Amino acid sequence: MNVELTDILTIIGTLGGFEAIKWGISFYTNRKTNARIEDAHADVEEFKALREYNEFLQKTAIRKRRTFCRTNRKASTGTG
Image 1 (cartoon, rainbow, N blue to C red):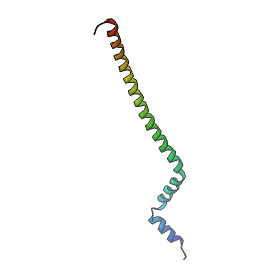
Image 2 (image 1 turned 180 degrees about the vertical axis):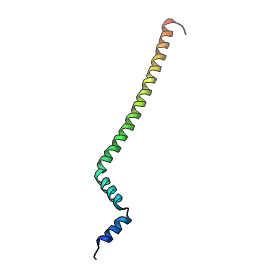
Image 3 (image 1 turned 120 degrees about the vertical axis):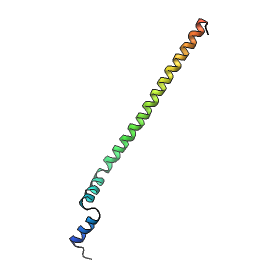
Image 4 (image 1 turned 135 degrees about the horizontal axis):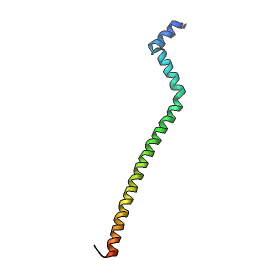
C-alpha cells in the first residue's frame, strides 16, 4: 500500500485541517494544566460554600447570644 503525500493531506483536510492538528497538540500538551485549573475552580467553589456556612453560623450564634442575654437580664431583674 503506497500512501502518497496528497492522500495524507486530503485526509487531514477532511478531518479539519491544520486547526485540528493544532487543537490535538494543544489538548495533549495542556491536559495536566487543564486538570489543575479544574481542581482550582472546584476548590474555589468549596471554599465559597464553607465561607457562606461560616457566616451563617456566626449570625446564628450572635442571635442566640442576644436572646440568652435578654433572658438572663429579665430573670435577674425579676421582670418577665
